[in-house]
Length: 478
Image 1 (tube, rainbow, N blue to C red):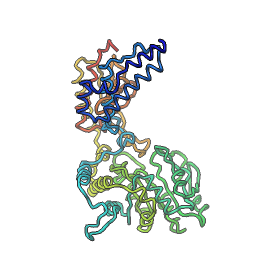
Image 2 (cartoon, helix red, strand yellow):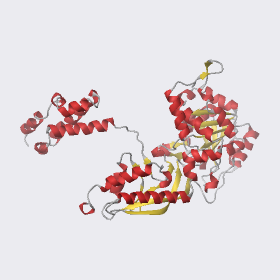
Image 3 (cartoon, helix red, strand yellow):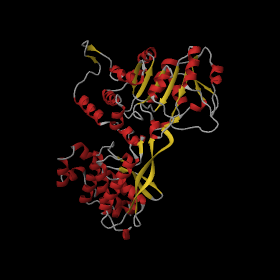
Image 4 (tube, rainbow, N blue to C red):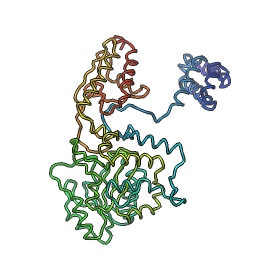
């Protein structure tokens, strides 16, 4: 097509004002903000303009009909008004799924959050004294009650807790860490990098697989500020290994007058061994070893909101509070509301196992999981009127996730779906694009949904999603 013809086509693009006068757009203005509608019209027209200029050979077939343009505007408006943070259905079997928002919060915590967000509260007001108070008292007493710590401080995540503690106790001084504990977790969070950012100086000891008490003793000097243990939540070294226990390190710290810190990572309040999961000490157990300060997450095994929790001796926590970083890392009323409500459930462990979703999913009996899987499979078969799907219940494995308890799976049952006339990837994409999205996994050319991480009300949503999928072309048309 000649340049003259392209120019002619460019002149055929209607103006923003012309599209605004169309009945369908006028109706859209009653449902959508005018600013957003104008932006969508301009976006659509600009895309058509670019297409004509960049591909002049196809200019003649570019659709510039007003009805087509209006449809594009409406689609653009729908995308523009959609929330980017959405509710999704987790059928992966990963309980603390970092990509899917980590831990679900308990109903009691959700109700408390709504109450305190919809009304004013005493976040920083001392009701007894009638004057300004501190936000940090709200979860402190119950954290100390449950763990035996002298004092507690809550910041916005565990990386922040580690950063703040190191900055407070060891800025410009040495921190001794076993080489086998220099972990990296998701998002490129590395202990050496956090230590560098805090101003502390890393002093590695031992080998990757074996570190002895004598390795710590050999490097202690007048610049040593802290002995640090890092719980390797997201990996395990097996075979010919040796590691110094918290008790041994505490004894050395007492002898040398050096505080001992443990970064627990996940921070469990319940013994996971009863569920066949080993190697994750409880926070209370770690505090009983005598360590001076402990840090861990609120949204992993604890099953609460994203938070970093610092527990320890009163004087250490008090120093952390005075650190200028604390204001930059502080938590808001929503985090404190959810955390305190979650912690209150742990006063009765049976109640916590029943009401904290993370614990409930970990503790779910296998017989109940199988029963739920059979129920979901029956619902999908009920939606499959033309018998286009192969639906089976099969044994599988779930994971705790969130970097906790690596290489330890929980036995589970999953519903496996496949079709002779439909690719597994098409099934996965269709469910992922459902409203709400359903996130499962593909194994052995089957689409798997682990029912351990599904909520009861989601079963019917999944059934409807399969109904919608099966309304598409018949197998012969694929």
